[in-house]
Length: 276
Image 1 (cartoon, rainbow, N blue to C red):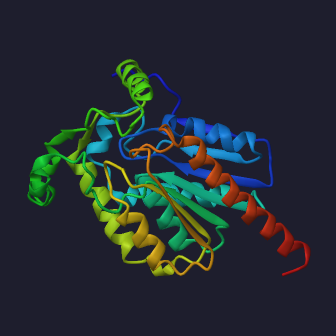
Image 2 (tube, one colour; image 1 turned 90 degrees about the vertical axis):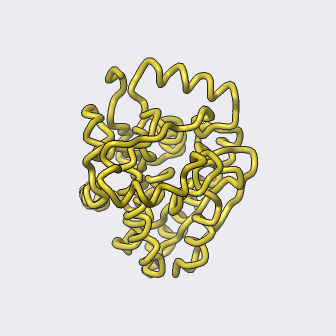
C-alpha cells in the first residue's frame, strides 16, 4: 500500500463551536472527510487525527495498546477544549468507543455523538469461525493472525462500495483486514468503557443501523440504557451497514448529528446569557 492521504483533517476558522472526530478500527481520517466537511460548512471547527497505529507506519497497528488510543484522545481533547464555548466529540466504530471514554472522563464536554458504536463484534460479517476468537485473542496467536474484512466493506450501497474498493486499492485510506492484536485492544477498551457507562452525564446521541454487519444494535442500546445523561437520544436506521457515513442514509445520519449539536449549542449559549 502507498501512503496517499493526509493523516489529519483540520477545519478551523475560530468558531465558537468545535468538534473532535475519531475514525474507526483500521480506518483513517479519510472516512470522516465528508462528515467533517458537512459539520464545517454548518459552522463548526472540525478536528480529526489519525489514531496511534493508523498512520503512515501501518505496521504499528499490530503493537498499539488501547491505552495509547485513550491517552492520545485525551491529549487532543485537552489541547482543544479551552478554545471553544461549545465543544463536542463524535466517532464511528472504534471512534465511538473512544468518544464514550472521553465522555466518562470529561464532564465539561457539551455532548457526544456516537455512530455504529462497537462494544461487541457480533455482526453478520464476522467470520464463521468467530467462536474461536477468544482462543486467538488470549494467546500469542493474536500477534500473527488477521482476518479479512468482508467484501461489503461495511457499505450496503453497491456503487459506493465499488468506489471505495477502487480507492483502497490505490491509497492508504484504511486496511482491508483486522489484525487480531488490534481487535484484542478494541475489546479491552470496550470492556473498560462498558464498566463505566454510568459515569457519563453529558448529552449523548447514538445512531445505529439494524443491519450493521460488524456490531449489532445491542451495543448502542446498552449505552443508551446505562448512561446517566439527562439528555440522550437513540436513532435506529435500517438501510445501511456499518459505515453509516457513506451508506444509503448518510444524509439523515449527518442531519441527526447536526440537529443534536445545534440544540445543545443554543441551550449552552442561552444558559451562559442568563448566568446559569
